[in-house]
Image (cartoon, rainbow, N blue to C red; front, side, top):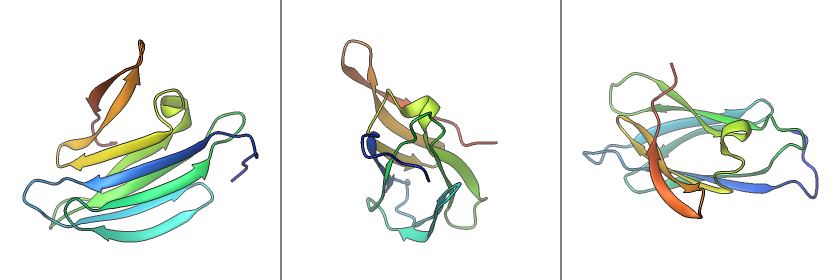
Length: 118
């Protein structure tokens, strides 16, 4: 991945907050990096740390699965969506989708939840 010394440094945290205390299986990647498969126990997190691209385009995506459920996908960092909303992006993974607190105009934070990718 192309990163520059002055490029914005970003951390993404993915936390297992599944109801029922189930283990969460995740597999995260970017175009250039495969971060491997990980099992997160309840309230455990996984951290991704990277520099963003100069002309945008940084993308990290993950698959999520628990129990015998389907394999779900979500873009945990999309520079076009997230660059101005977080540099410490903290995702709480719930069964109905990932949620996080986002910086709003006026410097306040609002909890926002997203649907799984189709």
